[in-house]
Image 1 (cartoon, rainbow, N blue to C red):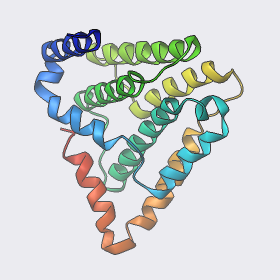
Image 2 (tube, rainbow, N blue to C red):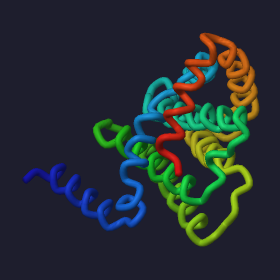
Image 3 (tube, rainbow, N blue to C red):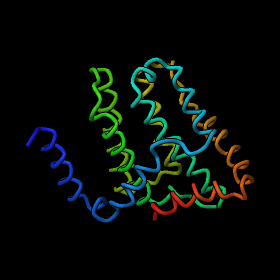
Length: 204
């Protein structure tokens, strides 16, 4: 058995002992797939704009993490159109965090990265773990995805340099919200409905 195989088996054992993986493993795995990239033209264009930063362009996993957050925002804005808040429930928040962390680990496990990027990934995973513990302890998050986005933004800012990076969270939300209003009118709302079905199939 190779070291990598041993590491994978250890992670599997840990996952099996985690009650959230036991009870919501399917939800977490499906959400990992759903947030692999943005689903709307607006989301894709906003993600592309981050290639302007050399540190992100030179190490695509950082770009992918931002894309995961944008995909979650798309789903949240879709929910708002339907009068639902998918990410207000603590269980859904933990499902989302576990999917987000799993996706990050999957992005970096086969990539080479130097100490600078290592520090970034260790920092973001540590803070995501802390956020998960806070939720388990009963902390109420009035805007879960903004809290998640702030962690991503601050860790990327630490990577690139303070005062240089701007996540533009409000702008991203606004662009997605405006685009979704148009998407509802296209094709009888079929595309909008298909995206909506995806998120509603994995969150409780």
